[in-house]
Image (cartoon, rainbow, N blue to C red; front, side, top):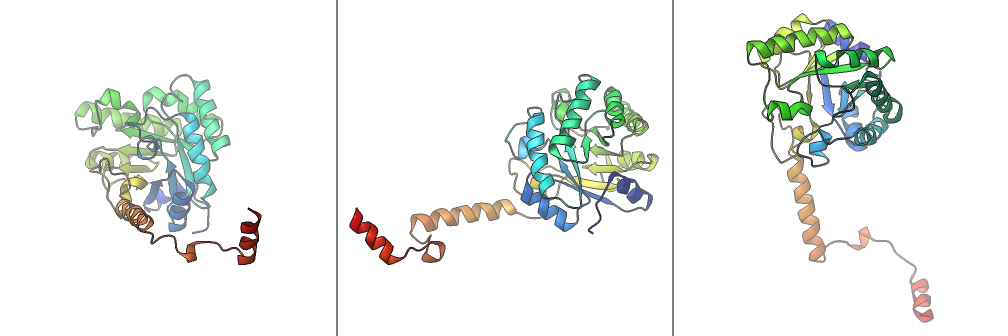
Length: 280
């Protein structure tokens, strides 16, 4: 449990038939808890735009946002592999910019790998990033940064044309040198087929049990993000309700004079206070 999980361990896990676990985190305490729980990898996803920053989608997240949150997560992690998302327009606009921004996530943020969305159109960017020594994780299927093209949050790969494209893009990403691929909201039989054809691990999110591992968003499994609950996720706890009760109890006790008590307060020597009263 104390050995650092690396990109090499991703491939070893697939070869050994061991499922890979991955969760998102965006802050120090969450990352520390998940790391202590034994998760293999932590993704600092651009999903922070929605579940942390309150944006409607991920396209408004900046490279500075990502660096800020990656730094916080890395401070709390000892074992898990930390992967940082490359946000919208930080790649795909020229190999130089892609490499520079990936490098910022590694050097300034402190993560060990980056993830970016897309297939054939970003292969050259991926090759350039990997050539500098930065490991890259791919992301196919429903790619949230392309929400305006998809017309909303929709599963991908349901037609022959789109299924073929996802499969071919997966092969292209593998050839480009990515160490793993996230498949998001892809029909589970297609995802299982792609997983069986690739030598690198496929990490599913809403893509069925046939993938080599699973990733979920922390705020979804904890019941903290309450704007909507994705079909592909599972709520393992209702921390949101616990947080709300804690807040309402605090409000009630404060207004009714129940909190704070002397146990929650600091004391001063009575002689000092009396002397102060005489002075004023």
